[in-house]
Image 1 (tube, each protein chain N blue to C red):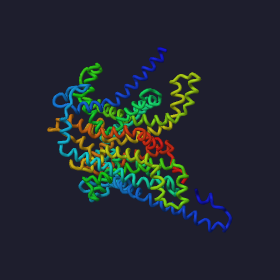
Image 2: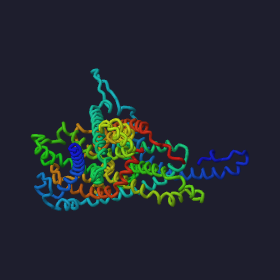
Image 3: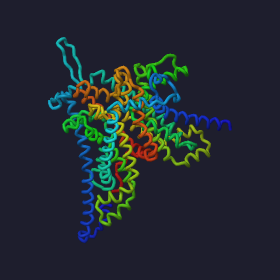
Image 4: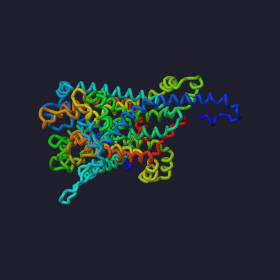
Length: 276
Length: 329
């Protein structure tokens, strides 16, 4: 009896360690973001003051609201574009038999494994040639390299598992493939579209290497680059309070989204990971 | 539904019957091509062509400001040597560059240690989440938090916690008497890699745990019932039953993570800039490409990293036995 009790206590201790370790760093960032003045440099584990100074500083920083807007526009358009291309491509890849399908799927999978640095030099040239350097369009364009293969892959796995019968009736009725996609598949695919769209959105929102390389002014930067480059009055004075406030602002919406769509995200991740 | 399997073989009588079927087949195939075209064109412009150009630039003397004037110089960016009059030979190129090999070593070291620890910790978290207990939903929600936080934000958050003067980690460790003086975790060459590893493991273990959990949930419950009836020790059950059964899912997750770890850039760029102890292949390649204006040299480094990851990807697809059949049609 005592043994069972110890075992249970040990298990719950482990659970507490996992939860605290996961959540504490973000909790500490929130704590710091509400401190101002010298209390910023005292270590406290519980809230000691609520000051909105850092949040005010973030929005007075000039370009930060613009950076948030850039991130929202870039991520949304990237996802919309990827889903548009991916739905039709996934239909062809999962429901129609044609030569070279396996090879094509293999290529798509390989592209999603690409190290971004491998295309950096070439993309730099392409973006400069098209006159997209230092514009949000250059980023939307370049983000397609990781959002498109991912969405195509996950939607293909999803569509493949839908039964044949749903399509057969439509074919007998003489429906064109386009009608089949929009009328038969789309209503069934909403859950998969939401999941992949959300995962692609998060990937675009968090992207750093391209955003750092293909923009050069404060007004075109995205949030991750803006946070990475936030600097204080002097080079040696890092504005930790402002950085933490900015971090909280851009992270809270993501955490809320992820917690709302928890189950869907977990299934989307495993479809993209385990299945391939 | 293929044409040959359903077409009745009754000589010429088939002829009026056959065109209808193949017409449907052909129109579907044609529609498929139209549907695939936008995606294929997009991938060629955004991935195929840039990759080709990167490899091309690695064989030229291109510089950031004069991309058009690039001239072919063969393998000189990779390996070259000059013999001086004194008889001394000087080697140059990426393959003779100690900074490159240092970056290779850092990347391999980082990838190996981070993935190993993430696998072990991820398995523990997955086993916890696979058990039935009050508050399981809460734990699953909690472990999604590190995953949802952007890498740059986690780098900054941990940079603040690991700060040498005002950091909370030093404060906590001093209070617990784990250390007797404040440590400059990030600036100190001995601990910089540890700092990077801690942040990466913190952020990525949840992903690992979820992938392993998906594997665990596919194991039929009655296997455990049988071992319980036979009174097998839980540790033995784990190594003899659970581990062999989740191994396929585990292997795929490990290689997936390894590929990801090999190309790490953002965390290191933000957390430990300019530390030669943590610079990885991606970091050093971008440095040469953009910051040092050694565009061609950086392209050569990018190409080498690409080759390494390409080999690993082939391994992944082969080991993962990824389903490429694409269903019945």
